[in-house]
Image (cartoon, rainbow, N blue to C red; front, side, top):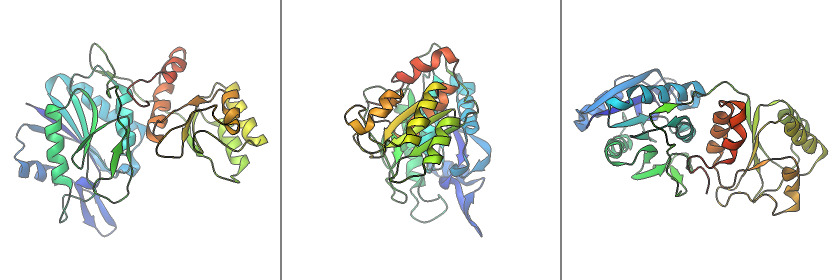
Length: 308
């Protein structure tokens, strides 16, 4: 089986420098040689980056590489930094359609160039998953194959840093041929509620951004202040999509449960249920890249199992 490995950078391919670990060419190549992976073609996306520097333009580059090579390979691996790996996995789930191959993202918490690295095992597991997993976008990490639109980084240093809720819907959009919807520039913010938070900040953001992820308390409450009410109603009048998700990592939101969340229903805020912040954010980017007449129905739909 022929596999294509798209290398973007990240910890897995880093070396020590005077300023700290940084991506370097040749690291992934050496690992593939150690694994005897002769059926793997390497495609570095230069310049290699720390994933903290990733942008929607990088999501487009990865998606384009997959679509361009879809019919020539049996599976795809994307090596990526862990800090924004969950964002990229979700973004690829929404952007790509018609996949007939598995796309498997992986990385490591320790560089391949240091002792006791988890990189070689993760890379080996990802190569295997790219041959055996169903079509769709997956994350292979610490021995687990995780749903690409449900995954999140739950620990900053543990080797099993990623977790994902289960989903009955696979991380795959149907389509006759492999294609992708390119992400367009947009002004999207993630606003997290906190007691006594600056009302001017919230009001300005809700009145000016193209879309907003609202991280609310618990099952769906927020402080009903005059400024927040004005901001949410301004967003509604501008037809600005606002998705509410919970700050709690489990359980999700259920708008309408508490009176302290009624304002969101009045302002047409979308119930994000148990979506991760990464999925909610990238879904908004995806929706804003679609024609206007498709945005509302797409936003309301469970596209790739991003929520239960």
